[in-house]
Length: 479
Figure 1 (cartoon, helix red, strand yellow):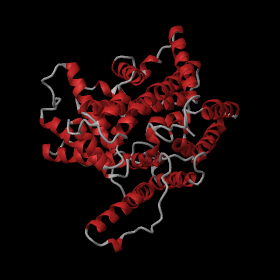
Figure 2 (spheres, rainbow, N blue to C red; figure 1 turned 135 degrees about the horizontal axis):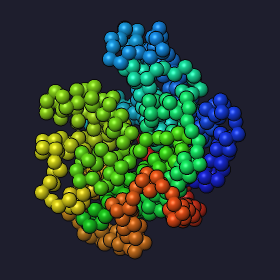
Figure 3 (spheres, rainbow, N blue to C red; figure 1 turned 180 degrees about the horizontal axis):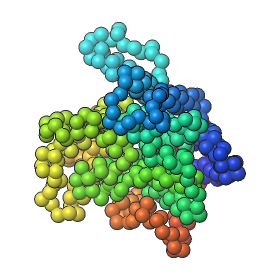
C-alpha cells in the first residue's frame, strides 16, 4: 500500500486513526503496531516475518546488553564486558545478515555469473540459484532497529522493557517503508509520554496534503519527461540534460513528498519526527547538498560509520578514505547494483575534491546562483547512475550529455516529444518550488486561513490528478 493511493487516503488511514483514537491510551502502541503490520503486509504478508525477526533480535540483544546494569543503562564511554561485545556482534550480524541476504543475494549471484563468464568458465555459473524477493523498506527498518542496539551499547539510552513499545518504534507505518530513519533516542520519551493537540493534528494534516501534492503534481509530472529521455535510443545534449534534470526533480519531490507525509502522519498520532530534507537543491556545493539531503541517512552514516572510522581526526588522507568508504556504503545501501556503487564513488570523489579545495565549492569562482546551478548539474549528472538500469545505459546518456550522442532521426523525435508545453510547465513548476518556494516544514509551522486554503487546494488538485493515474509507488520503496 502506498500513501499516494485512494485506498490509503480514504480507507486505511481513517480506519487506522479511528482505531488509534478509540482504544484506551495504554493500548495505543499495540493498536499502532497491529495496523502497521497490516499496512506492511498489504504487499507481501510473509515479509512481516522478516521485520518481526529483526525486531525480536534487537529487543533481546538490548536486554542482554544491559543485564545487571543499574537502571537498565550502561555507562557512556565505560568499558564493555566480553559478553556485551558478543551481544552487539549478534545484533550486527543478524541485521546485516538479513539485509545482505534479501538485498544483495541476487546481486552477488549476477556478479559471480558475469565474472566466471568473462573468465571463460561458464560452467561455474549459479544460474539455478533461487531468486530472492526484496522486502519493502528493509534498508530503512534494519538501520533503525540496529541504531537502537548501538545506542544501548554506547550507553546513550536505556534498554526498552516493553516488547510492544519497541515493536511500535520499529514498525510505525508513517515512516516504515521509506523513512525518515528514526533513532531510538529521538522518540524514546515520546513512546513513554506524548501530547495530542489540535495544532499538531492540523500541521500533520497539512504536511500530508503538501507531501501528496509534491508526489502527484510535481514528481510524477517530471517523471514522464525523465522516462521519455532515459528510454530513448538516440539523444542530443539539450534533451539529455533536460531528462537528467527532470529525474533529479522527480526523485527529490518523490522522496521529500513521502518524508513530508511521514512526518505529518506521525504528528497525527502524536509523534514528532525529525526533518529529512532541508532544501538540498538550493545547495552551492556537494558538501552542502549532503548536509541537506536525506538527513536521517547522512547523519546515521556519520554517527555510526564515519566517526567510528576516525572521521577527519586522523589527517587528510584518512579523512578522504573515510569519506570514500561512507559514500560507497551509501551507494550500496541504495541499491544492489554496480551503478549505485559508482554513484557513491562519484559523490565520494567530488566530496574529497571539495575538501582539498579548502572546503570550498569546486566552482567557487562563480556567482552564488551559478554555484547552485553547477551543483544541481553535478547532482543530476550523478543521478544518471541512479536511474539507468545498467552501466551501459548510463554511459550512453552521459555521452549524450557531453554532446557525443548524435543528432539523427531518433534524436529529432525525442526533441519533439520533450519540448512540449505540458512537460516544460511541470518542469518549470518543479524548479520554482525547489528553488524559491518555502519548504513544507516551514510553511506549516503557522497555519492562518490563507495557508489552510492553499493546502486544501493542493490536496484537491492532487486527488483529482491521482484519480486519473495508474499505480505509481514512491521511488524509494525499492531501496
